[in-house]
Length: 314
Image 1 (cartoon, helix red, strand yellow):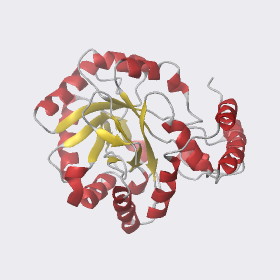
Image 2 (image 1 turned 90 degrees about the vertical axis):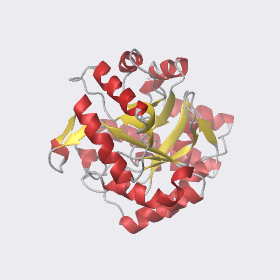
Image 3 (image 1 turned 90 degrees about the horizontal axis):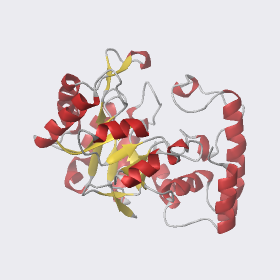
């Protein structure tokens, strides 16, 4: 396994991180049961993954609980990352709301510490920017719980370059967690340069574009889960068809390299400037092992060029 320093922090994280969105189950995903989820967490640890990223909203607390229980025996050897700022009044997608206010964060941090069964969270991230709350209030609250020893480092997720600049007026952040893949590259225009300038590590989520870059779907696929609702990503309509055409080309390149489409897509993310780790979601131990084959190689120069032509940055 390869490890990289996360921004200006003292955290050395594996370049493949365990993304725990999927194991939370409903309302976002169907998993293969808690037993296989726990096995995948332990397999990831055994294979050198030390960075585990979750959030309260993943299964409405269930993902955090699974991560906390599975990693309890190895707590001092792993890096736990979770989030705040997404709340719910009932367990449904429609009930989710952004709230990064002082009162909300102070409540959420104690809930996450309990579910993760730990006394400190290594990386605590604002899940989505809350435009109704002043960034100063959010950052001052995060700095307060950091001073109390409840969190080690502060990060943000889904923040634009301008929102990051605003955040930096009030305190230090060590990481940004954006959606980043061959199909979602817009952060390379202004956000990546800003992160490099300010020593902010980039933690890519959805490096496989929620499964599309695995190559297992075709243009006629109809999603019945959250992917059909237009929340994030392009999973319907003409945009989806165009993406599938690009993925079909990636399959050909991956075959030439003796790799899977998914491994080639993850490998591309790992080779990008500013990238610290790619969070990959899994359902079982087999998928963990397959994903790790994305590490430690590089496509031929011709194939690297072909990938760039197919997935050209707008």
